Length: 422
Image 1 (cartoon, rainbow, N blue to C red):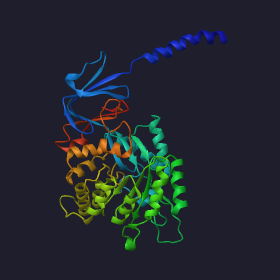
Image 2 (cartoon, helix red, strand yellow; image 1 turned 180 degrees about the vertical axis):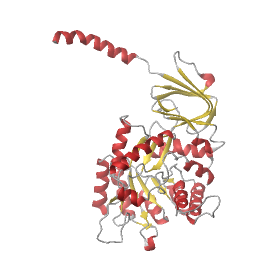
Image 3 (cartoon, rainbow, N blue to C red; image 1 turned 120 degrees about the vertical axis):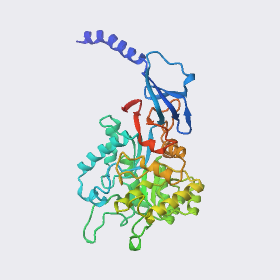
Image 4 (cartoon, helix red, strand yellow; image 1 turned 45 degrees about the vertical axis):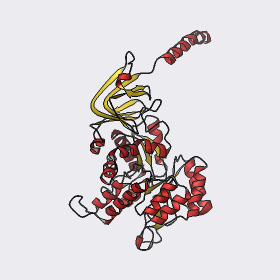
C-alpha cells in the first residue's frame, strides 16, 4: 500500500499543478450602457474573469481573449449589484401579520424559513448585498442565515448582520397592559456602562457586523417618540463597538435623539423623520449619513387605509417629505435603504422610486444604492465597476436615469462572478 501511495503521489502533484495553471473563465458583458457606481457610460463593455472585474471601458478598446463567453445585452444598463441599506429579513409585510404577532406567535423555525425565502427574493431583485438591522426577536439567527448563504447552501445577498439590536430597558416591545406578564422582546435591553458594554460585546461575539441602537422610541407621554439612551451612553456604545472595528447605526426619529446620536459619533441614522435644518447641518458637519426609509413610511400609512394619489397625504408622509428635502438641502450623505420587511422583500427598489419622487436626482439615487452605500458601510471591492472589484452586477432593461422605474426591470443578476438570475 505504501509503495502504491508513493507511486500515486507524482500523478496527484501533476494534476494539482495542472488545475492551478487552468485559466479562469472569462465572460464579456455587452450592454448599451454601464453605470460604474459614479457615472453613466454609453458604449462600454465589462469583462469578468473568475469572480472579479477584469476590465470596464469603451468597447473600441477591447481585445477579446479567445474562447471567451459573450453575453449580448442590447437595450440594457449594467450596474454594480445594488446594496440594500436597511432590511429585516426575519420580518414580513405588516399588512400580512402585525409586528407584535410576528414576534409573539411565529416560531423561530417559521421565521427562519421565511428569511430564507426573503433572502432569495432580495437577490433576484438585483440586491447582492444587504445591511440587516435586527432580527426583531429571532435572536442571532441572521448570523446562521449569513453563514448558509456564504457556504452556498441557499441563494441570497451578502449580509451585514446586526443580530438582536439594543434598546433601553422598558422602551421597546412587545408590551402588555398586564404588568406581571413577561413578554419576549424584539431587541436586547441594556443600560449604563456595564449593561451596554456587555450587550455590545456579546452581540459581537455572536457574529454581529454592525451594532444597532434605538436612540429614541415611542415611549414618551401618550406614546409619543422620545429619546432613550443618554448622549454619554451612546458615546460609550460607539467607543466599545469601534474598538473592534464595528460601526454603530442608530434608529432615531426625534431631533433630540438624532442630536445625541450625531454627537456620539455614530455611522448612520435610520429614519430621521423629525430632523430639522439645524440637525441635518450638524449631520453634514459630523459626516453622519442618513438612511431615510421612505418606503416604510408610505407602506404603514397605506396599511391604515391611505390611498396614494386619491386621499390627502397623512401627516407622517408629509413630514417625511419635509425631512428628506431638508437633508438634501444640507448636503447630508443619503444611503438607500427602505426598511424592507415592513413591506415585501423583493420590492426593495420601491425606496429608489420614492427617493426620486421626493426630489433626488435619478443618478444620485443610483449612486446611493451602489458606491455610496459601499463607502458608508465599509464594503470593500463592492458598489463600483472597476478593475479588481468583485463581480456583483445587475442588468436592467432600459435606462434608469431616464426612468427610475427601470430599476425594477431586472434581466440578469451576477454575484461573485456567478449568474444567479438570467
